[in-house]
Amino acid sequence: MDPVSAAPAFCTACGQRLNEGSRFCIHCGAALNQGLAAPGPQGSTPVSPFACAECGGYGSRLPPSQIYCPLCRWLRPLCPDYAMDAGVFTWRFDAEAMNTLQSIAPLRAAAHATSERFGRPWFEAALNGVRLSERQLPHVFRAAIYAARVVGLSYLPEIYISGEEMWNGKTLGSDSGAFVALGSVLLNFKGDDLLFILGREMGHARAGHALWRTVTEFVAGRRAQRNIMGEGILQFLNPAKIVESAIDVPLMAWARHSEITADRAGLLVVGKEEVARRVLLQWTLKSFPIYAQLDQDAWREQEEQSEEQTVRMSEWLMSSTPYIAPRLKLLREFTQTEEFRGWRAFIDYWSQQSPPPEPVAAVPSSARPTSSQQADSTTVRLVCAACREPMRVKRSVLQGAETVKVRCPNPKCRKVLEVKPKEPEPPGPDLLDVQD
Image (cartoon, rainbow, N blue to C red; front, side):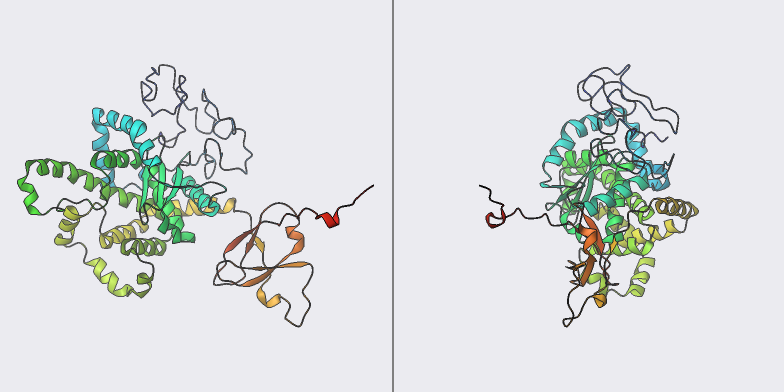
């Protein structure tokens, strides 16, 4: 099993999760001579000194149909012995930059300590957002679970929706405790588009980007549009600016490479290049209506011209995110690899083995009684919240107390509504049986 996807060990002194290979707990300082619980052979259930009270640790108490533990956030693999190595979607330049950072032992130790003690608590508290759960935006939460399972995460990161970020999506934290912050505007993406965005962030967590992203923001500050030429050429007459630029250059380069890795992870999750292209273009333009007005043939021509030296130099100097034209070209090249096709065939097969429960089929509006007909007492009238399409559902389906899923019959909508049966009202005073 890949070390990153393996479930984390725990400190026997304080119970906090540990980073693999640590000799001391960064939380309490205890020595870890016997503090790490080594995972057993592949296919067996590892034993941890601190087992989850809900699932017993690694899902040992959960029924096979349950894929997520709400207490420890453990995720059931997509299939038995499923393990996607991060190298499947990691771009080689990203891997080289990460290896350079990891090879500097003092920097690595300081990064872990900074991220756990200061970085994650600070940024998580400053999000000023809503945390997703089974009850809070459940459709987004379920999509995040699926994306995390596809990229091979063993534990689901915490996910927040923040109005402070708007169009941004960030994965912060550490290797053992990442969390995701999605801008509120991103929830306007629906279906596969939203799944691609969630897959990107889960790819960041799987590739180990959370740690260095947190350290970068904690050290360099939360400057949204940081670039080397931000203060003009005269800034290089200042020795302090020269030193600052020497730090920013490798950080900006790594940030660009990490976005390509995340794009590949999202593409593996959603499996459709046209979805990834649409989302990234809308994301770059920060506009939904403009995309519909674009001439795609003209855009393809611009995309083919993106290898010019001027474009590459501008990206290197001016941006910590890759320019959209070469970015989409790299994405297209990834879809043409045998590795991508093989993994997508594997993911498609196992995703179909355990499909989600089929929503209750709604009666099309054409089947409802006309104004001259009497309403059928065996059905309940509903209206789709998205397209306002009238529909009917059998009353017998809504007799229980459980929430029922109903799919809109409009072929252009097909949204799934969650209908909760109305609780009966308590009897009024006039209905009470008065006894002498």
